[in-house]
Length: 305
Image (cartoon, rainbow, N blue to C red; front, side, top):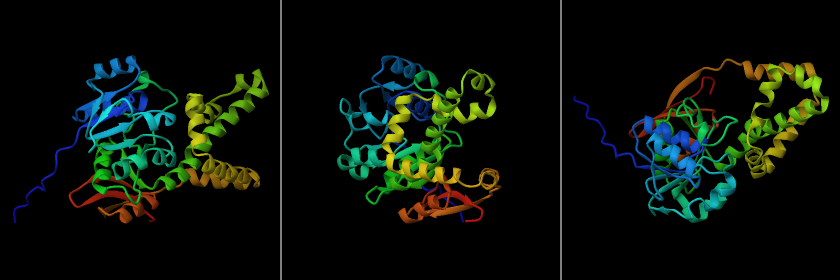
């Protein structure tokens, strides 16, 4: 029997609002993948840099509109732009519940919250890297009113730039990143401040462990503050759990921490139907989507799941 390919709809255009490190890198990566990209930034230098990479600069956006702006600017990022009423809107913000609250009422199921787990301590259009998303996990929110076809289209954007998509809810995302992203920024700040109080000799002797432990606090302080304050409840809870760990006998703490970060974990390939509950179960199991197929997605879960 001859197999015929399943027809697919053309990929919608992508418009990126905010062309700094994340937005500019996404635009560059999509262009490298062969997808046309439009974009806008309030900074003329960022617009010029994006134009040189092949981005069409415009205030009229359609298809999939990506908000790559600081958290405080999310609610007003589209105010001066003309956006197709049928467009799907997503974002790259590091906290999801506040963004869902700011945009969800106006956009409803057209909004798909997202957060690529990548980036560096650098910022701005000078830090653009088209390889930034390769191999990264990209959390993509599936709320009760999220329209699944729109979620899948945003997932395709993430997959096109080499990321792996993790289906989550906004609440699950914020609880998880408090532990693995937001608290580490606060710990890095505390470590750096403590070393500063220890004096010039301590700073002169600092080497790899201090450099690695404080790298993320080189980020823009305004960005870090907005991130941790935007997720204050979950971050405070995760920080309390860290303090409980530090109160344990140190040999036990060291052994348990070492075991977590050195564990060997294989992967098991799975196929998941295009169903909200099944997709969220994949994310909750620690897995990710790696490929979109006709009636399902392909991905993986940890081997023991």
